[in-house]
Image 1 (tube, helix red, strand yellow):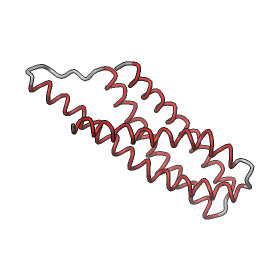
Image 2 (image 1 turned 60 degrees about the horizontal axis):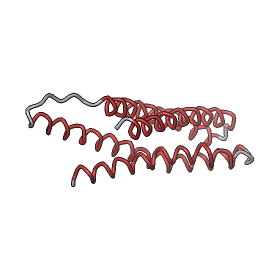
Image 3 (image 1 turned 180 degrees about the vertical axis):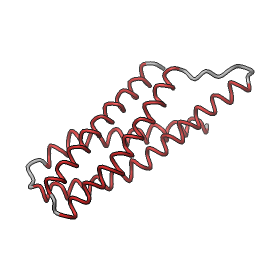
Length: 156
C-alpha cells in the first residue's frame, strides 16, 4: 500500500513538472510573443517564479520517492536471499531524472537569477537573452522528461 501511494505521488510530481514545461513551451511562450519586451519579460518572470517553486518541490518529491522505491525493492530482494541488480529501465529513469534535476538547478539558480536581475534593471536585451537560455534548457528538460516517460511505459 505504501509503495503504491509513493508511486502515485512520484508520477503526479512528474506529470506536474513535465506537463508544466510542455504548457510553458508550446502554449505560454507563443501566446506572449506579441507583447512588448517589458510586459512579456515581467509576465514570464512572474510565471516562472511560481512554476519553479512547484518544480523544486516536484523534483525533490520525485527524487525522494524514486530512491525510496528503489531502496525498498533492493531490501526485499536481499531479504529473499538474492542479489539486487537494478533493472535497466530503472537505471535509465534514475540517471536521466538526476540529469533533469541538475538542469533545473542551472535554470532556477543561474539563468532565472539573470532574468530577474535584468527585469529589475529594465535591461530588456539581457532579459531576452536570459529568457532564451531558459527556454532552450526547459526544452531540453522537456525532451528528457518525455524520454523517461517512454522508457517507463515501453520497457516495463
